[in-house]
Length: 243
Image (cartoon, rainbow, N blue to C red; front, top):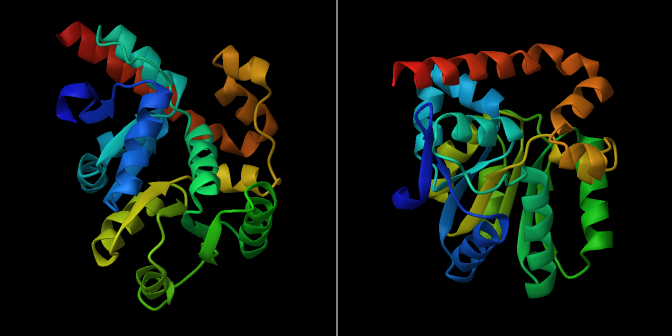
């Protein structure tokens, strides 16, 4: 997929429209492939830029999708425009729809215990033909837990990991080789939306590319994380002028 990517600070983002990305993932699922999918925004790119070990993990992914308008803006500034934003939440919902159509098996990892249970209940309600073969909250001992064995035994088609970055990508990179198959994707805070505990930005905010600002005013505690955005853009402009 190298020819269809755009380099943003050393991270190769797939340069496809949303439906094209879905079609690629659907083919991966049908062929029983193992795949590591990263939904990366400017915060993740900046963290990778400042943490080489994490950057190697992101670079090892089978696909990195541009989850965040800041990535699209950066690609335009660098004169290598990415076709379309692929929002992680939208991608997760579309995969659940495919799961419902094709009776796919799914494992859901992450969130608080109550959040995970609510998300599972909502998936069962909204996507009744999906087979949830297992789930586990995100607070566990990485060295001593049943999760990897459960996933290996149940062989899900989709594994959604909501541990937040960098943990979710670290967990996937550490465990994916042990699974017989499965498209494994970090979904972060999307599990909170799926559980109904956090509201996604209204469509107007999404169309105005201000979803990040809506999240900030809805969850003021995120302000420290949001500082990554101006630092990210500064790096992009420095790179442009250096070139």
